[in-house]
Image 1 (cartoon, rainbow, N blue to C red):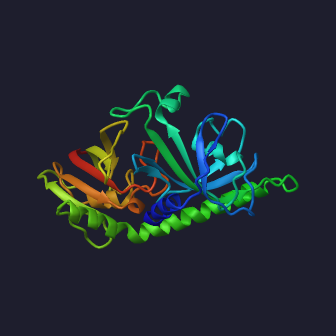
Image 2: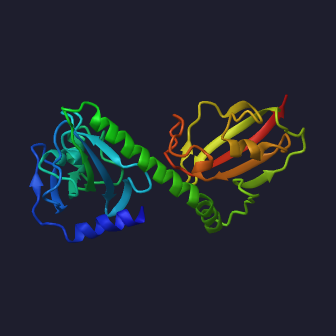
Image 3: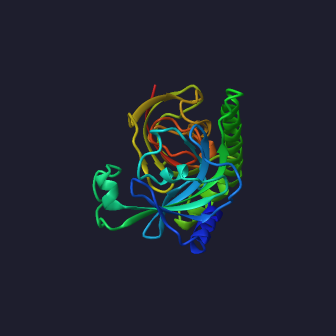
Length: 290
């Protein structure tokens, strides 16, 4: 992720000075061009890696996440969006910088209003690399879809391997920086016991009522349908490592479980607003057992 950001910042420093304007008013320039590789065409798919900045601060991007696979279909390339530049002669290997004014984004309904503390003349900058172009092949129906599926699977394997290797070290470093005394046994998640409890013990097969609060390691609270749930220990109603951390605990116990993403949901989180590949904190309080 850090290498991607440094690469795109470096390109901007030495990019071409010629700016182009699309019919919708989007300003963009080509930072680097390959010039001879596959051309982005309607009907194809562009594989992109990008960062988005506001006041030179990175706000979002594909670093540490799946690339963006942008379909080149009329109606999907929203006017005044950074990806609109794709249809103006970009090729595989090209790097681009696009600039959007906030007042223009509001007038074109890309924003509902100016964010607090901003001005209409402020700009939102997107830098992206066209890593690969998947071209439609009308003589071999399904070929492009097969190539896309294989590419996505390879990207997923790469990310899964990366996060599996780095997970425990990443979470331990975060805990050390925040001076949190959480314990880890063998290959289990990091557990901080806030209250050991004195009630009945939970064993495999026990049904327990718990309060569950969920957040990312960075502090983003995840909204759940219910905060109080019943679960069966050993049935894996929660990720297996979380389930294991509950075994042997007593009613009344409250735990904070700091969990590397691959011990939680990895790149396939359920539909609860959890970002892909997010390290998570499970805040669990055991209310009762039956």
